[in-house]
Image 1 (cartoon, rainbow, N blue to C red):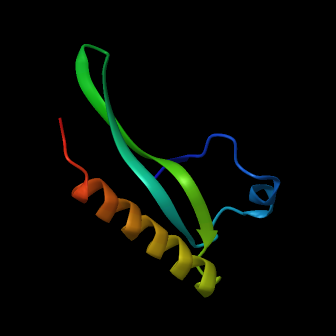
Image 2: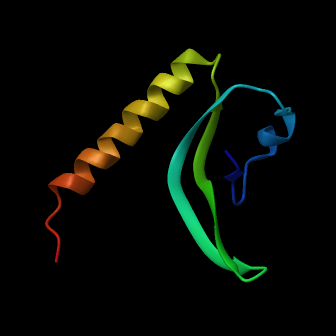
Length: 78
């Protein structure tokens, strides 16, 4: 899946095509017209990208993401 990572840290330059990564972010689906037909693209807007083999960083990233979701669910809407 395509990943858009705005303002990545310099360490992102060491990532290679084919590296297994864990991405924390938001999924976006865009719709547009091309050639008279409606098409869509899905991508992830990354907040954080971590190499999958860095287990402690992955665990910390997932814990923080779960905490953010808990906060989002617990906050009143309106």
